[in-house]
Length: 295
Length: 343
Image 1 (cartoon, rainbow over the protein chains, first blue to last red):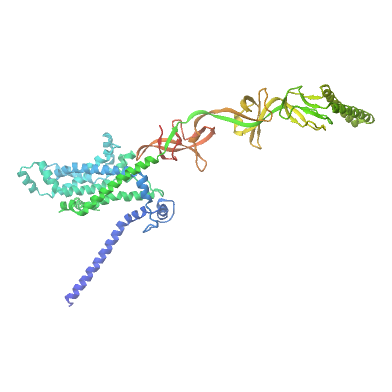
Image 2 (spheres, chains in turn red, brown):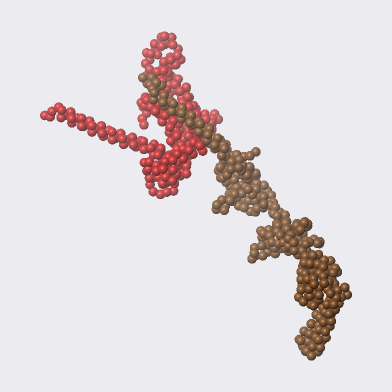
């Protein structure tokens, strides 16, 4: 029979081993996830020659494999200088992206919140059917709805206007689904109490629903921002006027001469998404958990 | 908990500040890049290609010359008293040119007579070709004799036998002639001869009028002869001048305006560019939809150069008469560069 102390030591060692394995596994995952971002940032400060040397086989005529460089040999801010001083097109697209994202998110909050409240709290026989349709629409990818959306926008003469991107995004079904899940967590007894106190349905929605469902609203803002900031299909399909294009379309063709510029643009483009993510990380996690989305 | 944490945490405040700074920087650089872009866009002037003929000025220089020449016979052993005209001077027919001393003329006449007698005696004893030769000599002496007699009759002065310019005057005053001196007068129709570029070959014809600047006068001459020298690669023109007195030997500048055949697309010479490979192109201004809105872009269009004068180039290629080609600019322009058009 082994003494208790020896058992404890053995357990501790086992725990330590598990911790180390977990740490190593996490490190590997972090490395895999962070490597593209690290390479992006590193490459954005590389000179054209070095870019050609490292990625010439992908973006140029060079043969062979990509050469991975952990640090740039001669860091330069040339591409950022060019981007910020000589590329007004980049800023046009940046502000277009800001406009569309803000418009879509505002529309989602204004239209989606009452809709989600209705789905969550109103009692109707047809509600389930309607919600089912919403869910079906939600799982449909953009490519499926693209033609019908295009035809509708064409009929409304909205093609080649900012509304062509903003309106379909503003009335997207996913935010309603997520917010409805949040609103469903509000106890009905609380609403009943408010009704007994004489509160109207609008008052209940504004005074109880929104404050308590604020986390859901914020989570759809964070999820929506990340989705629409990087949107590429809708602007590409519904906007032919280049002056209305978004930042995602700034890098249409990467070649050796433009590679540095594209990398610098990508770094700048990454920043708002990172800031929003950092600010709303908790709500993003919660939103994902509520919606059951993964990855 | 969640609601409290959203706005209350320092972290989020910092993020809000960072976001604001980021947006501020983006706004600032939006303005800077637009201003810079606007500053760097070249201002250009453009024009549509026109259907036109090209105007060539065929020009060259030559010297005034005359097509006839008359030699004044000079006998040997004459003492020259005075020479009235020098090389390059205009002389009328019958005017005294050289004056000799009377004694020397008479002596020369006497010598001629003796010589004549000697040749006659020699000719008697000769036969065949030698006799004929003697005969020719006698004729020459007789001609000289006639000249001397004319001089003697004309108060010992030799007169001009044509109206024209003294081309050569080798007789000098107070010298004794040896018979080898040349005195000649050029006369007849004045002309000038010069070379021009061979590319004008097809545009010039005998009989075409041409302006000639001779001395201080401008006259209209006529092309008398066009000859192509393949060795030198030059076209030599002989231009006949109208009747008149032109300073012999002076430089004459001639020019002739000719028009080419009609070309469909003519652009100003400054609108025609040539790349390092020698290919010709023009930059046409086209409105294109770009990220910065509708912008004017200088689009490179390949052309072939057909002909060129001092102002215009006839071309054919990717342009039409509806295009507007860049012909002046305040900054460097190149293919696909944005431009601003001068109104």
